[in-house]
Amino acid sequence: MRLLSRERRAENREQFLRSGNARLRHKGFTLLEVLVATVISVTMLTLVMGSFWTLWQLYREADLMREMQHEATFAMTRIADKVRSNGVDYDGYLDPNRCQGDINKTLCLGENWFLKAEDENLKMTNNGTLEPLFSANKFALDYLHFSVFPANKPNPTTLENGFQPQVTVHMELRSLRDSLGREAEPADALKFTIQTTISSRKYNF
Image (cartoon, rainbow, N blue to C red):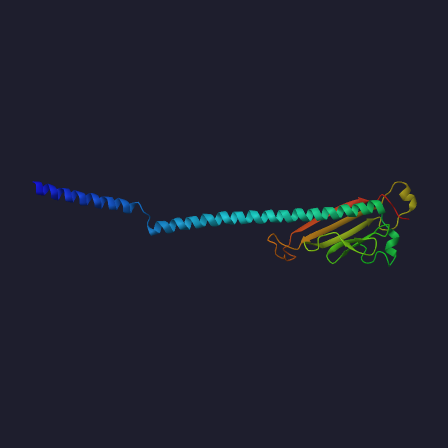
């Protein structure tokens, strides 16, 4: 009986150890489970990173648009100040030494001020030295059009009755860089358009 009891105990102990090892083996992951978990994790990470990248690009594009808007608004403010304080110089368009070039791309004002499109920029001067109004390394002037009303020199009597010549400025800026700071192709570049009409408070007879 004692021998049988020892054999029984040894057998029970062996069975217990085998069952414990089996339980330990079942607690781990198989290779297939690891692969599936890895694929799911990589997919989720790719989706998250893709969304983050898209949002970051949108933020950079919005930042570029804000900067272009600031540049365009600043230029328009300077133009409006010169138009209101110096007036339209109709006679300047007839002087070959004053306002040369396309009348729709050149604005001739009093006190020898004039503005013109040159080298993809809007430039202004009253002393012969053209001053660019935009950051030449960031933005380019894609389109510029000046429209003066009336197109011909008005009668002084009309001006005495309170009539003021008007200048309409229409321009379009283009960003030279994309949202990643790379050189942008003109067809794919961000663009900003602005237009305003300014009444001249002064007239040059």
